[in-house]
Image 1 (tube, helix red, strand yellow):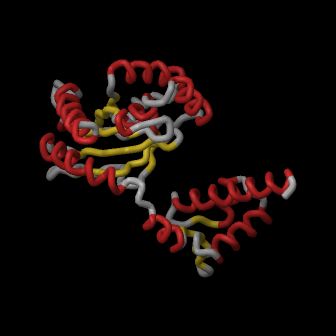
Image 2: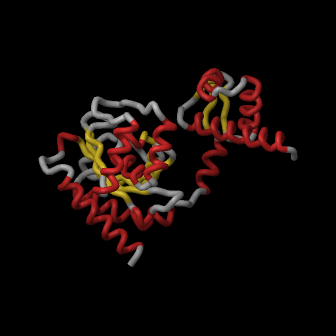
Image 3: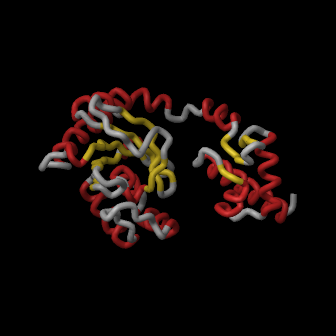
Length: 257
């Protein structure tokens, strides 16, 4: 295979993966939306969709002319066991913390400039969350996301944020300026925690800490406690942070005795 052929194959693969990811983020999408959002030439999009539909990665409804994620994606997802062993260890600690603080505890991993929720432990008096297992939220606007970004080398975190700019400004409290975020991440690294003070959604607060013993150059993980602003005390986030850090200490002792 020549150099040009290899470049074409790589580009096609990147487009196919990008198309699958785009479709997975929506209940269904039209052909026009695919062309607009992914900037794929019409002829290339037709070819990719035919291939992905035939292989089951994408499903097409001829009645509505909409595309959605296919059964093949679900089948492959069932074979992924990357977090199974880890969750078996972490889940009891999350459940205990959720019961202790009476609020929601979340475990997340960094994906680019988004945090992806891997596990969630709900307390009895739970609140309606914007997140669920598998959900991606913009890391710059969440406490757990800023904690995850803080686990990256400073230059890499800044590179990712600048590449993703302009960053979404979701509430009046959201920090979306890259220079401000870079300075904020320096403080997160120094203090060992980050908060979301109604930065992603009004009426919701979060405090998060890193899990460096579960993180490396390819994976960054963190744990958080999320709660309604109305249920936070005057001591927030210190009151929750103490219990969160105690849980992390116990978890680390179990994983690295």
